[in-house]
Image (cartoon, rainbow, N blue to C red):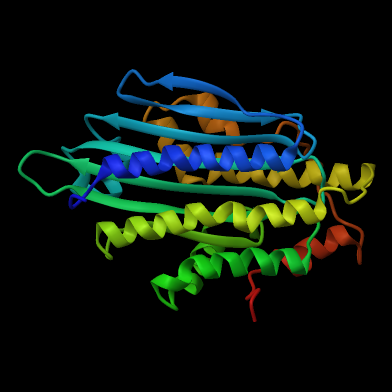
Amino acid sequence: MSLVDKHAVKAYLMQLQDNICAELANADGGSQFRQDEWTREEGGGGRSRVIENGQVIEKGGVNFSHVSGAAMPASATAHRPELAGRSFEAMGVSLVIHPNNPYVPTSHANVRFFIAEKPGADPVWWFGGGYDLTPYYGNEDDCRSWHETARRACEPFGEDVYPRYKQWCDEYFHLKHRQEARGVGGLFFDDLNEWGFERSFEFMKAVGDSYTKAYLPIVERRKDQSFGERERQFQLYRRGRYVEFNLVWDRGTLFGLQTGGRTESILMSMPPLVRWEYDYQPEPGSAEAELTEKFLPARDWLA
């Protein structure tokens, strides 16, 4: 393997998309992904895959993209001046699953690689990614198993890796305008290059490969749990928080839109149905109140 093998990264990411789509479609049992292949005028393209109206998944998307450009947007070079004057390539797999059943959490994952190059200079590159869980009705067992799988994925890379990237996830997926977490966290990492290319790539693969191991057992446990209109309406209300985060705070959404990405693919993460209610307050002592009081505040799920 060369010092920085972007072709190996691309091959892995495309295979990861295939693997995750196959596992999710099998878990749903009632619907399949449809694929749109697209190209970007400025360079690159991708494969967007969407599953809708399934037995388990109301809407889900698993996207692969590989985009390139002659120059970074000004918003990026303002924060990373070393990127000025360089061409760039960004590739990754990003997914969001919105289930039918309110007792099945929404989940999000992505793994990505970025490289900026110019003649006569070493490339600037890094890996990023992670995954997080957004329940509507909290469940201690689900939260623990999710975080235990994340911890196991990180374990070969050092004892400090899981707690560090778990904390980063808690801090990143936070709706500052509401002073509220989006969900119960997981892993988040970015700008990873200090381990060298091969070990950093191995870590990205460990995270990508562990997503379905973390999520599908939860789906299996909760997908047949009975629910009524009250739970459905609360699910739609809480989905509003997901929309708010993605449109106001998410770096990936901003980067994609600023670099001329495919809007349909970038906004694929939006739930199919959502509602907002003015000054909603859950009934004290209810399961709905328990979500924000007990589950959303950052905590050590493996203590």
